[in-house]
Image 1 (cartoon, helix red, strand yellow):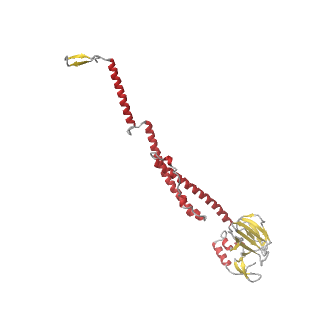
Image 2 (cartoon, helix red, strand yellow):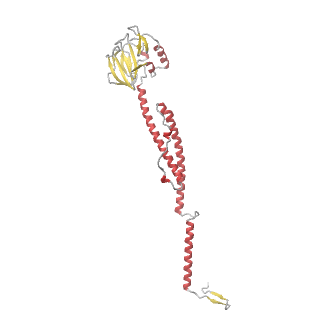
Image 3 (spheres, helix red, strand yellow):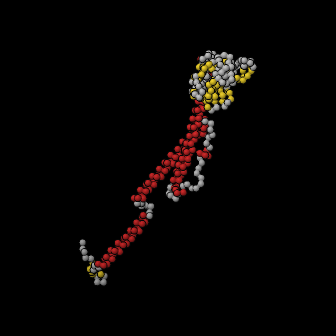
Length: 325
């Protein structure tokens, strides 16, 4: 390639040699470089502010934001599913558990109450996905509050269960003498003929005739509060406090198998049939007392009688005959 350059001179109609000017060349080169840099910077700024071009960092951040949005959407779906499960538990709590244990249901407005007052989510506003983030946080806060309310309700149900268990164990539930040991059921609860005065008077218990020495059983769990003969007419007798206002009385005993302040379990042998006190023949006079009032013991034998045995006992107890004490 030729290093010498020529140009055509129209005046002389001949080719003339191009003279090299070093300073002009340098100026041209610098002007070219400066203009290239200037237009390059302009183009770069335009591209950087254009949605068509993203830096590697921006691309990474965009992928992370997209992933976060997907995760928030999934979290919202899971929260909705959890809310359905919680609503089912709340319905069972109100309509089954709290009804079973005779306590008031929790009103829906209490369970579903929102959060009043200041804007709790002000710091989450102003971002691209603020609505989604705020909605997710609201669901979490409401669900958390509902879970706390339900947890307290279950704590209350647990306490009621314990009380119910104690109540059930306190209620007299068995006949104090086994059917196989009975001679007969002599007299029931209600007005009966007095064997001594032959007048009609209230008989506050049930009389079970059985041979002297027949075992007498505690009708339920409790504590012996009396085991003496210092009560008029009852002779040797035992009283057991079962709690919740229930007391049972076993009179005309031959002897004791327990003593005062002793704790007993349902079915424990507490004494033996006798004929002490105001009694016409060996038998057990049995009373059930609730809140210091005598009630019919016939309603408390569901623990050891079959339906047929209970039916027979009910027929005999309803007959207005003569009592044995």
